[in-house]
Image 1 (tube, helix red, strand yellow):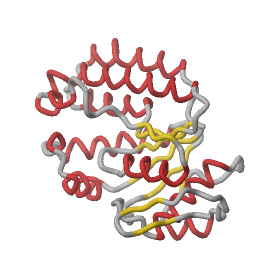
Image 2 (image 1 turned 60 degrees about the horizontal axis):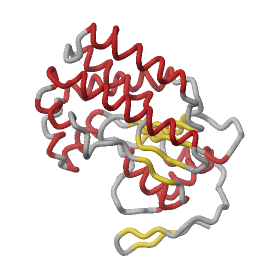
Image 3 (image 1 turned 30 degrees about the vertical axis):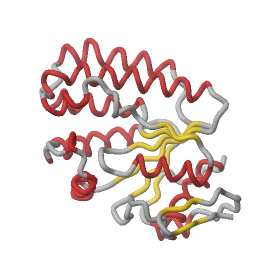
Image 4 (image 1 turned 180 degrees about the vertical axis):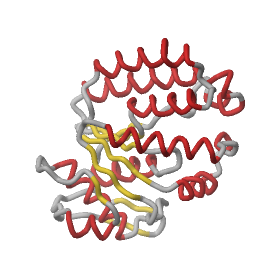
Length: 240
């Protein structure tokens, strides 16, 4: 089974991917940040390196997606190839990826590559407000992200919302503004992951959108499945 955690920069994809994999035994698959040959240069000079950065991401995400769906493993991935076009679209809107690079080169390649791929079994979309995303980006204090403009993030959130509305495959949308996506696995975290796991494992026509943990708790049945114990700081959690 192949599932993907999607959403804008700073929403908590890596944290959800990591902790869900610890609880369930799914193999985590993270996007390439360290070792990306153009990413740091892109943040310093977007106009110069936007096209090269996006093409590298497109290749890298296609390669990982293809290998994941071809394997016999249970895999949860941080971000999908489909979201790559969201970033490219915003760069084009901002004039950092010119029309020739976007419409004549990048996007035709994106369409061909995604037509080859089998879609993931589930897309988990993490939603958050612009203020929440800016706070989380600032809090995690990554040097490359220090110069991300607020107006860029606003455009990215708008593009993401348009994308997830049109995403045609199986999905679960979760509002995360009220979640503290840190290392601390509190009971609300466990409810969140049990809700995700229910959607992952169920063949029922469960809702695509889950707004708020109270909604999650009331609408999703409890999954009685033995999971691995996970520890974080001085706390240990086990779902049974």
